[in-house]
Structure formats: structure tokens, C-alpha cells
Image 1 (cartoon, rainbow, N blue to C red):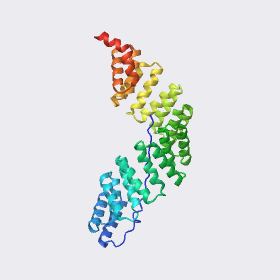
Image 2 (cartoon, one colour):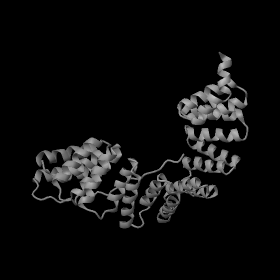
Image 3 (spheres, helix red, strand yellow):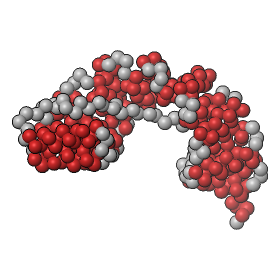
Image 4 (cartoon, rainbow, N blue to C red):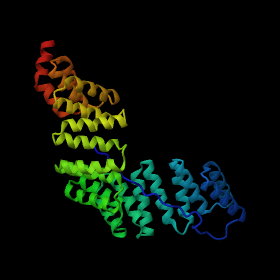
Length: 350
């Protein structure tokens, strides 16, 4: 139930630092006007001015770079990528343009292209921690976890207090089944930045995977202290309390998650699971109904509702839900439907 948070570094653009000589004076004027508009967040005017500068000076690398930065702010990723490619052709410091192109590709979701762009940046300048970190993000998203770990290693070697890199290396290690390594890295992340809220949450999930439920509850609690509306952490803490057998406390956390986000299907379904443990069948059905209303393809919610219906002897509803859960990939529901009482029920109906 944990969502891994992969944070893309925000770079601070030194808009006047990308030097280029012998620029057409009129192009320089338009460029400067574009900078002023960009800094004022007047993006449409900034694009217009940078475009005018480029029309006057077709090889104006700084203008391409900064127009690409505006497009990136507007989430016009293809335009941004085009401009960063052009900037890389005309700027001596092309690694910056490749890095920004990689960032645009990450935001777009084109992870192979992002990996390629960050690799070009690294080839030009191999002592920037953020270049390795962001390539690690692109690799992670392609499920190349071992390669991602190597890039996070390089980022941490260059920047030993790089909290994001520790967090994401932990997530990659967790994917590789190295739970102890993940816990160690999440701990390093929160030590480097005690206010890194999602790292506390991720540490809780790693401890939970290890079976350390009380440790997980403590880490989730730290996350909640830092962010009182962190509904994911409330849901995750409720799950740890459920696993620890603290059912009433789990209900409180799931309820708080729902209060913070009333369309949070996970929390409704998780609370339904607690009600099943407490033999509160009608309450379980109500929560499973809500989860299914939010997400009609939520197989686990159909399974929980099937169990509750079975206990209320509503066999038709129960079998229908077991079948639906099985169709949605829940293996235990498939087994129960085909080999449990539902098989006889279907014969009886015929």
C-alpha cells in the first residue's frame, strides 16, 4: 500500500551564466526582455521574446535553453525537449541542456530517453551528484534496479548527505529484496534530512515488511507529526496496527485517512478488513461497497465483501463477489469460487 516517492531534483537556473559571444544586439535585447518576463512568471511573453531572439540569432543557445525552461514550466514537454536539444548544439556547457532535457523526459514519462539524456550530461561532466541521481530515477522507473543502485551510489559518493538519493536507493534495494539494506538507507535519509516526511513513511513500510510492526508504527507516527494531513501515512500506520492485532486502533487510523481523503479506496477496503476481523459484517460490506464505488476494479474489495456476505449467509451475493474478485486476479477468490461452496451453489442454481 506504499507509494514510493521519487523526487526529481529542482535545479536553480542561472539564467545569465550560459555565455555566448558575438550575439546580435537586437537579439540580446529580446533575450533580456525574455529573462525579465520569465522571472516575473509571464511565460507567454517570455516565449515570445525568446522566439524573437532566436529568429534574429538562429544559433542563440541561451535563448533555446531558457525557452525550453519556460516550456518545461508549462508542461509542454515535447517543445522543451526540442529546445534543450538545440541548446546542446550551441552551448559549450551542453551538459546543462542535456540534464534539463532528461528532466523534461522524466516528467513526460519517457524514461529511456531520460536515461539517454542524463548519460550524455554525465559524459560531459561526471562530478555532478544530481546527474547520477536523476539517471537513477529513470533507471528505477524502467525496473533496472541494480543499475539504479549504482547511480545512487555515485550520487551519494559525490554528495554524502544526499537524502533523496538515500531514500531512492532504499526503494531500489527493497525492490531487489534487500529489506535490511533498505531500512539502513531510509534511516540514513531521515538522518540527513529529519524533515523528509516521505522517507519516514517509507522507513515504516520497510520495517513492516521485516515484521517489525511496532517500529513501523513509530516511523509512520514520525511522518504524521511532520505532516498532519498525510493520509497515506495514516493508512499505512493503520495497516501496521492491523498486522499487530491492534484492530480498534487500526480503525481509528483508517477513519482518519478517510476523513482526510474521502475517495481513498485503500482505506475503505482496509477498514472493511478490520471489521471482518471484528465480525462486524454489515460495516465491512458498507466499506467494501464504498471502495468498489470509488474503484470498480478493486479485486481485494470484492473479496472482502464476498467474505462478509458469506458470513451473513447471502450466498448468491457472496459467490458473485468471489467470481468478480477472481476475474480481477485475486487467486484466493478463484480457488474459493471453483472449489468451495460456490461450485455447489452454481450447480444448485442450475
